[in-house]
Amino acid sequence: MKMKKDYIIRLIATLVISGVLFFGSATVNKAALEGQLYFSDVIIKVGTELTVYGQNFLRQSNVKLFYDDQEVALGATNQLGEFTLSFIIPPSGRGLHAVKAIDADYNTGSGLVLMESWIELSKNEAAIGETVNIRGTGFTPLTSVSFYYSDTPLIVTPSIVKADLTGSFSVNFAVPERFAGVYLVEVRQGDYINSQSLKANVWLDINPEIGLGKALDVGTELNIYGKGFKPNGQVDLRYDGVSLLVVNIDDKGTFSAQVVIPAGAGTSHSLTLDDGQNRIVREVWLENTSPSAPVITLPASGEALSYPFTFGWEGVNDASGVEYVFQIASDSGFGSILLEIKGIKVSQYILTDNEDINNSPAASFYWRVKAVDGAGNESGWSETGVFDKASLVQNLGLVVGVGAGLVAIILFMWWVIRNRR
Image (cartoon, rainbow, N blue to C red):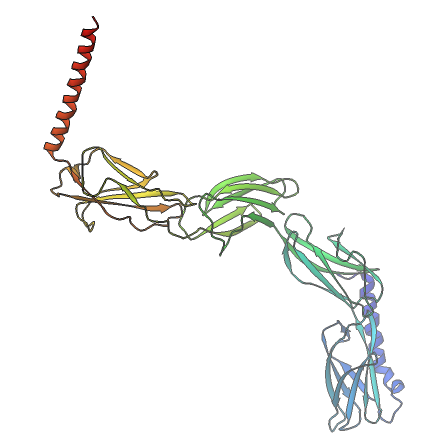
């Protein structure tokens, strides 16, 4: 953005340059030939390319091109005394600058170009708090420069800035804490204003870090802090599209929240934050390491069991939490599964009755168990355990034995009571 004065100066400069090109050739060139120069543009910026076309110079002669007495290009004229040369505008201050060409016979042609100031941002968009560089060229040398962020003074580093001898400067600033949007970064020097637009994005700090290469466990607590969101609004935190939490945003556009990663497959999941104006989507990767296979402990291999059947194994530890899958089959290859229980949360299972096992003609039964963590990663199966069902005779003997024991206890108690009398 330029002030009205800047446009007036540019208009006057263009008229002056045109007058020099039209009237000045005879005055500037005192040699036998009157060199004439034409430019691809008469309003220039540092770092851009300027092409110079020359006429009425010595034929087939070397020709040198100067910018403010600094040699910037070397070439030659053709059989008509013409040439075309280009050069990159070197760092220089605001205002008129002379471009001059001289051939081998010292025939000279010259003209004026107008340097305008220019600023460039290192980024077109940045998150709140992120560092952005401002580079300026074409400013008045050794003159103070001030900075604004949508008409508010902007803190830059270094804090005091003057254009150098070539009219250039370079400073850094941190994007101020305001809600997300598009802001004007302004550089002012006297009555001149240069500006560029910057899109300020929301800023998020998530601890621990998330994303590819940052595999987390189910149940991990994420501490989330945000800036630049809709002031006095609410932000909805969703995990794979399901809302986990809705939190309030303060009048400065900041909020903090804590969410726990729910159970899910060991792969990529989406964490979305949405305040109605800003929608941020980040990836959460869950760990995909399988837990260890359980080690079975009881019953002893080949033991004859009576109901209730009790099976046990050593517990498996995993940061994502563990559940177990338990199977009983009538064959060692588990081709005929009689029982499968999922979601067991302890390292033991007690079976009180099962018709499939009761009615099976198999002499022996086989069982195994595996662990599944909260991210869905499965261990291998444990070793296979073997057990038999206690026969009716064995069960009857047990009943008789227990009954005889009870009778003996009753008789003993009767005898004790009788002898006390």
